Amino acid sequence: MNSLHKERVSEGNSNNASRRFKVQPFTLKYAFPRGISQAVTPYHFDPARQLNVLPNGRPAVSDPDLLLAVGTTTSTAGSATHFDD
Image (cartoon, rainbow, N blue to C red; front, side, top):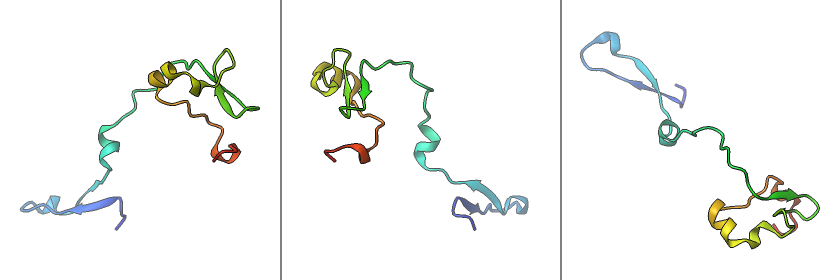
């Protein structure tokens, strides 16, 4: 039997004796994304410095108000390229 399927046995009606249903994790059933966010982040990734930087050139992590607003300044560079990992 496939691990994603589970057999459910019904009492009484033999036609329903071997129904199958898909088992999904809770989060996949109830937590759906609302679509792509239209938010624009006020920083961009600088590959030479391996940092997210603000338009004025300062590192994005140096702005506490920005960190409170966005929660993170994670880049998509990948940890293999970071010197401090």
